[in-house]
Image 1 (cartoon, rainbow, N blue to C red):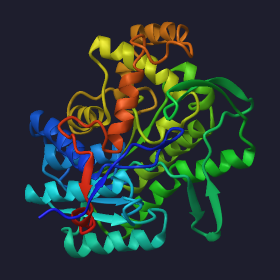
Image 2 (spheres, helix red, strand yellow):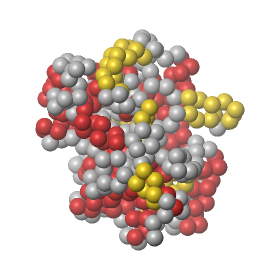
Image 3 (tube, rainbow, N blue to C red):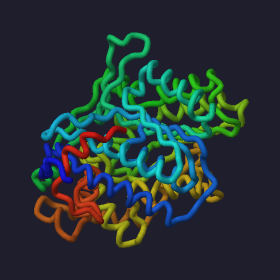
Length: 403
């Protein structure tokens, strides 16, 4: 018997979604699982902890470990739950629920912790669960966190806030507005030194180090343990507001953290990895200033070349071929480089040529990959998902679900 049916409408504020379709999120999880299973089994992790495992790269990492390698998984993420008929929670809330359902159907353990990964309390809760109910040790930790703020663990009254800004100069350029289907000129002011430092505290590797050290001290890391954090470098046209901006400084700090982590886990034959990712559509990338314009040009070129990837395609290839496979691409800094398809010389030349042709009048035509970018953004929130055409949900049914 059906309960109270409510209609789901797409709602945006700029490039931020204000609505979610839970049934569409379920289908998107199923679609990603199907993709991994079709690629077959590989010998990867068996007990994995994903910090930031509810969406995008973190969710993709969790799915490929579970359904590609048969891993039991734990996810830590901070998602807003369902409140009432007008506030159905976040996409990540539903991703956690439906991933757990599908993993348990496959006979796998899937534990979701919903809360602040930066806190000591969360680290303690996860460690106790690993000891008591997860076999005592993990062999993989993925750190995939994009957070707006973090409390200073030594003084929780001090809160650091991350910023997506250039350093040393203001930057002006076009950006996409998904709400208005418009290309608008935008100026981003240069970050202050304090904003740079705060972003490093939030988006660098400090908390990653704390997690690994905490679990190592508890004796919860298996011999041969691996840990990985995702970075991004991208094209020189994006450097001002990413690689050489506040986020780039944070990623530089994360590389330093990786070296220190490597020494911490050396005695258990551990490996600490930085993987430089491809540009993809995520909640974070959609609001990075000017970045979506680069994406809509890049997507068009990579689709024509047959190299365009969504997060699940990218991370399944990363773990299957590079982390646990024999097809590693490593640069002179020791970083894994699955982004080589994006930075291919011909791909970049064609992308830059296309960017120079984009105007407010033609950006949303067949000239670019705007349609792909917007569709992938909608799919993050359960809309326009292949195999799902639900425009209504059973509120009574979904309100009973727990992660």
